[in-house]
Image 1 (cartoon, helix red, strand yellow):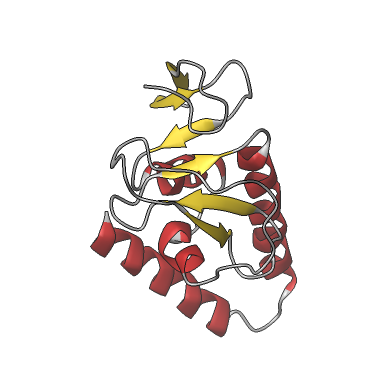
Image 2: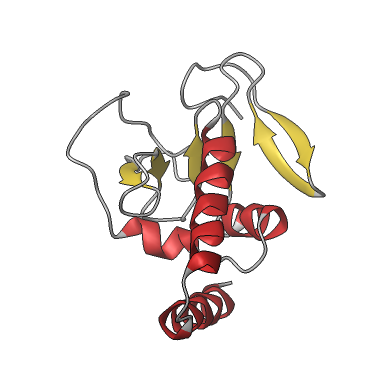
Length: 144
């Protein structure tokens, strides 16, 4: 398969026991549906279904050109914001659910997710956090 960003050949890479497609030229990575959730679950304990939550937030700003899904062939990928306020813009295929991450976006997601997790531990009343965490885990189990 060819990289949707630069056209170079994608190769299979292993990250934390997950096989993903990556590009040596632009350092992007192609994730199939649920692979982003699985990677983030392995990186940060107690995270929910970030793929489903993020799809709701479509940023107005266009930073990089739109991509065509390499799985579906004729489908334009949507620009979505990883969570509502992260300012990490990723590409998502509305048909097959695949995600393209540009260079360093996975590391930025891990850092952002850790900050959320650390901030939640400072809250004295954990009832809403616990509810949201369980809701995220339920959503992840339903859409997995």
